[in-house]
Length: 247
Image 1 (tube, rainbow, N blue to C red):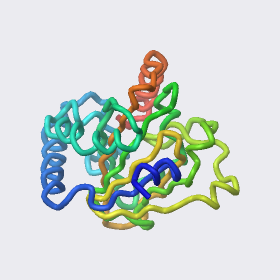
Image 2 (image 1 turned 90 degrees about the vertical axis):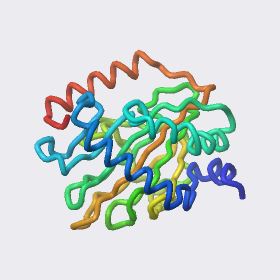
Image 3 (image 1 turned 30 degrees about the vertical axis):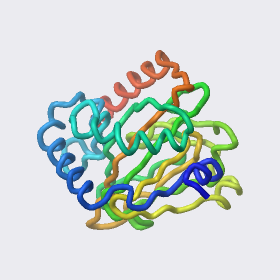
Image 4 (image 1 turned 120 degrees about the vertical axis):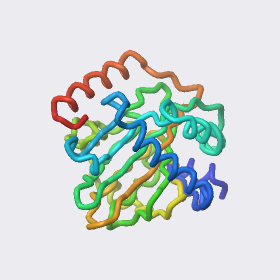
């Protein structure tokens, strides 16, 4: 089966070695530079910490492609080409994200569908997740419910998880448990999933190992975003996180 056929059947596809050692070295250098030089200057709603008072608990950085030219160039190359192959049409690049689950304190990611956040009609979009560390069941690998993208949007409700404010409220059905697949990854491996694919990840239970990754979001050009609703939600969320001392 082709990557596109697997993606359409399962709602996700695993691409081992999407980035080789030389590309990973460039990415690592760019990440280190951005964290050291740019993060202190970024809008607070673009940078999340597990504990804002401790810079070692950096959890998430939004919109890397707007803050560093390297990520803008990379975003528009290999990830875009793969997105267009999988979605079958021209795409709009929307976001490059940095994720980490620091050892021992990195929280579980609640089961959710990215499309709930995107507010698209039709919901034709995908997210890519590329490991920068070895990621396994001990430090919180991604778990997908195979085929869940075919069954529409599930009900979501507010969570207390930083960076993942909405989670599926009725998760845990027999089909969720039966069809869930754990996806360990090596540095440079990539997972791409449809915006309606249900996914989650456990907490980082390891003592010393980070769980870093990059995320890439693409919307198909046929999808239309409710911009006003999306901006209103993001503004409200930023206020809530600021009040909670997370940004």
